[in-house]
Length: 109
Image (tube, rainbow, N blue to C red; front, side):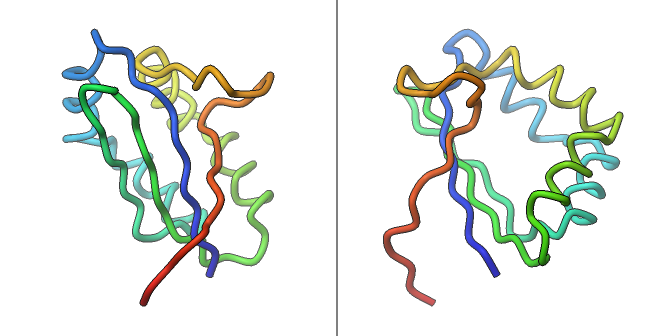
């Protein structure tokens, strides 16, 4: 199992919309997340800084292939097109980075 943590900013004027969207995530998107071997997926919000932190556990054996499968899924693409305008990359993001993966420095089971 691989633990993944990522961070991004949330536009201040989109906080309520983002919370509303995630209170009722589309079933097709949830199913695709599971099909791509992602478990224990959680998104945290830190206000007033409006930082989003996501955490999930990857249980598959080909992370790149599962991420490509998810990215190719039409309903997931539609979901991302609704959510992405709510978000903005950190100032330190590299070209093409959206959610920025974080280093796993400590874990206690």
